[in-house]
Amino acid sequence: MIHQVRIYSGLVLLVFVIGHLSNHMLGVISLGVMEAGRIVTIEPWRTIPGTIILLTAVLLHAGVGLTSLYKRHNLKLRGWEATQLILGLLIPFMLAGHVIGTRFMVELFAVKQSYSLELLAL
Image (cartoon, rainbow, N blue to C red; front, side, top):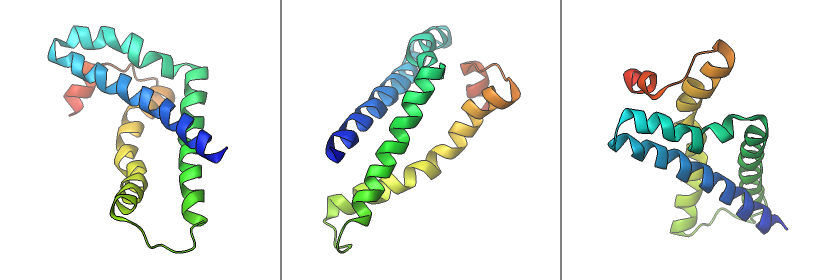
């Protein structure tokens, strides 16, 4: 059961990341195409059901990962396990600025998000 929760929550996160990065790739074509692609790749996650699904997947995936770490009898890890653990623990810190700068600004301050504004900020 725990393994299935980890797999399915990871798949939801993978779908989100693939859509998000695919939208960034549209910027190679033009800024207008990138903005148009956002409607398909990012806006569904901005709805209430999309937000609930994404947030649930994040919390479940992190929770299952931390639970599996807690249940270990020792911290003797193989190389790939240590790499997976370190990268997994670093992700929230790496994404914090991006999430605050995009989602929270839209929700709390009613900033109209656009890639023009995002690229200007970068």
